[in-house]
Each structure stands twice: as C-alpha cells, then as structure tokens.
Length: 69
Image 1 (cartoon, rainbow, N blue to C red):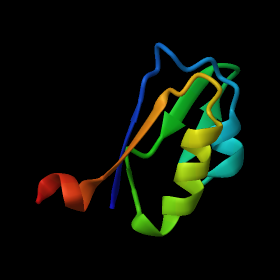
Image 2: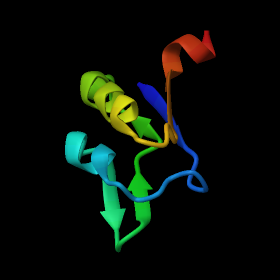
Image 3: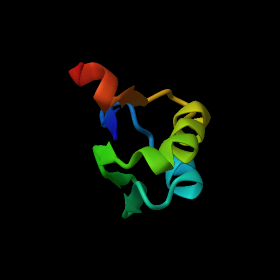
Image 4: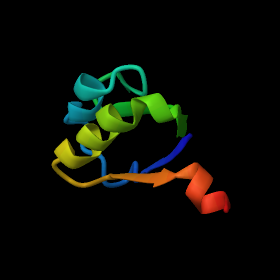
C-alpha cells in the first residue's frame, strides 16, 4: 500500500495527477483536489508519474509497508 500526502496549500489545480492516475486523484470543481491517501500498490507506477508531473511538487508518495517496518 502507498501512503499519499498532498500539500493542498501548494496545489494549484493543474490536474496532471487526475489525468495520470484517475483511480487515485480527482478534481472537484476548478481547484479542489480529492484523493485516496492510501492507494493500492498496484497503482505505484501511475502515482509516481502523477507525483513527478505535478508542476508545484505538491504530492509526496511513501511506501506504507516500509514506513511501518
């Protein structure tokens, strides 16, 4: 499982994350971001792409299993 943290104060609503990982991120209105803070490991590649594509680097991705060990 992946643990996601999005700095919503930094997020500017560019929606790159919602485009690249729509099962994890979704835009609510023009600038509101909804996301699953505990994404499945199967989404790892898409979530990593979404985090890398964020123009303001607002997305932090952690491996929940490694963090709990």
